[in-house]
Length: 423
Image (cartoon, one colour):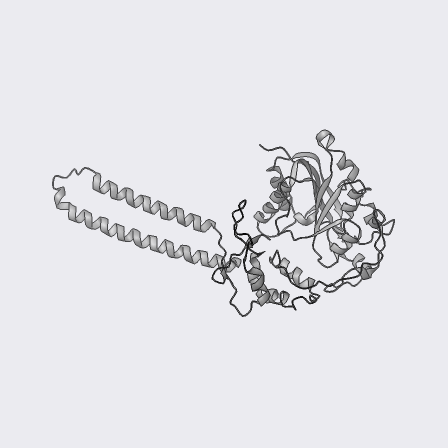
């Protein structure tokens, strides 16, 4: 989720957001004012055709006065409606206010949100005079959870509540506020050096299992944690699917890494990439074996994904899909995505996500869409049309069918697309 900076003056952090409705109302008000002025101008400047026009002047002025009163009433009603709509929007989205004087807000939240003056005064380069904290705007809608998260002993041990923090993130409270306590540490005994760590068999004691239904890897491997992770924690079995991913295909939709890396030709090589929703990190591992650095974005939904990825020696990024990617524009040579694009809700949500993917991918870089499940024709059409708007070159585009566990046929889309140069 996007974040907002809170500048605390009177103890209240207010959020403002322009809306489509308010824009329409502003245009309507402007139209009313312009129309009224034009009518008045016409009434006072037009040449009278009636020789007895002087007898009609009082009546004309009376009509103009009545019209002006009616227009004023309309403008007041428009203004009142605009304020009501803005208030409704604030309450709906959680932008209403962050009242730090509320007894529900713990002292640590107040301390975190207070602005801190720069020790040397105004910064000549940026013009700022103080550092202001940043917090997800939807945190205001989860004050009870936020209060629990920020209730701890300062300089003491943090509660073992990472799952509470993740619950806040999934509720839109992202980024979370920082805390002044020591996170629980877990001894990482038996970690292997690269490249042995890629496929190492680690003790389950190096992962945090609190807040999870499964308490061991064996439990995870018999579950389908998501569409891209069924048995994905089994990185030891030589005959397992995870060991064969990206190097041995099971169907025409399964592209091989070496084939994709060879598609750029003279357009430059693949050095760094971004894997969104990358399961247990196998894509990053396969790329690391080819001297390509991959950042894997994932949360710990139902499994210790981040710790498992880190244990394998590749880079995890604890981030939800609602958060703007914390990277500069045009930095990655490759972006790899699977079924994380299957977002629910309004179509604009998917558009925001794909536009952010496009933002961090460099011109000439590759967008690899890997086995996206087209659950219905409408979803496939919507995604296809959205991709076409970006003008990507289709290096490879495959639509194929697979039989799922219940024996039903499902349609999948896999594609490798090249970002164009835009001027």
